[in-house]
Length: 125
Image 1 (cartoon, one colour):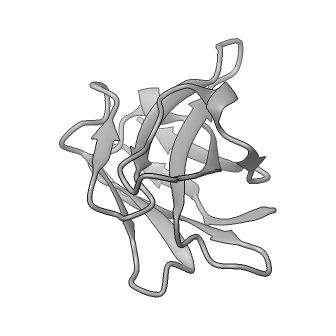
Image 2: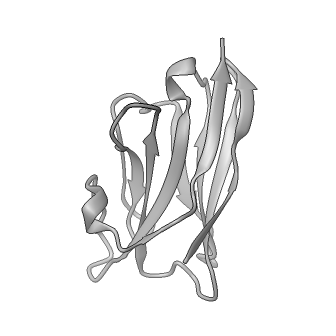
C-alpha cells in the first residue's frame, strides 16, 4: 500500500509538497506516478518518475512548476508543487508499478498496481 502525506490549502502562487511512501517496503525499482482528479473531471496524469530515478515526465499543464523526485533510500517519492493556480485544485493520488528496466514510467492510470489514499490540494485565488 502507498501512504500519502502533505497537501492542504494555499493561495495562488504558493507551494505545496506531497510525499508518497510504501508501507512496509521501499520504492526501489518501482516507477511512481502522480495523478489528480478534480470534481466532475476524469483522473489525469501529473508526473511520473522511473524506478531508477533517472527519468521523469510531466503533463504539459505542470511542466516547469512541479518537480517529482525520490531520495536515495527510495523510501519516498515527492511532488514539489510551485506557482500553484486554482486550476491545480484536485485530489492528488500517487501510484506505483514495478520497473523491470529502470527506465519505465507511464501516463496511464491502469498501468499502475498500487495507489495511495488521495490527498486534497486546494488553491484559492
